Amino acid sequence: MVWTAAWTDFVICLLFGWLGVHKFREKKIGMGILYLCTFGLFCIGWFVDCIRYLLAAIHGERIQGNRPMQISAGAPLPVVPSNVMLANGEVCHYCGPATFVKTKNVVVGYSGGSRGTSVRIAKGMSVHLGARKAAPIRGDVQERTQGVLSITNKRVVFSANKGAFDKKISALSAVTPYQNGIAFQFGDQQYPLETRQPEYIYQILARVVNSSEDI
Image (cartoon, rainbow, N blue to C red; front, side, top):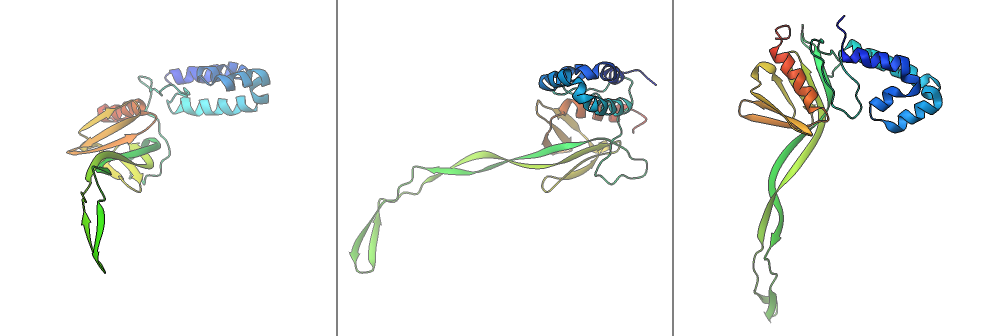
């Protein structure tokens, strides 16, 4: 077994979890104080967290609260359950919520319009004077669709009502992580997704692409 930071996190939780030390490290100050005052939620919360940290360490992951998750160098990629139908020899390394973002240029209003005045000149007949058609104002509107992003050793799959895709990693042209999302480029088609773990996802993809055991 390779000793990683995830195993260090587990040991800290095991030895000092009843004092809430691991909660403070997760930047969950309120829960840390609660654990400190109740001896780890009467040891029940401490026990549950020890199991959670142990499973994370086995899978090579880190539980870091609001901090971005990291994969330790040399640690194996995590293997997680997924809603994707896996082929023979295919394993899932990441599965989490994501939001597909599509930008549309649509008419958002009108300007410079005038209704004018109607003048009646005979029974059943009138003339409309001074009417002027309003000019449309266009703008970019983002349409968001929630779904599930899965990354296997062979594919990148986003399952959703709109914007869903299932692409082979060998067809991946570029990956661009942002502060609150990540964009996948397959040929001339780009798929921007909002996610809470863009850097973690990028690390997994880089390892999958560069690791001979996953290609």
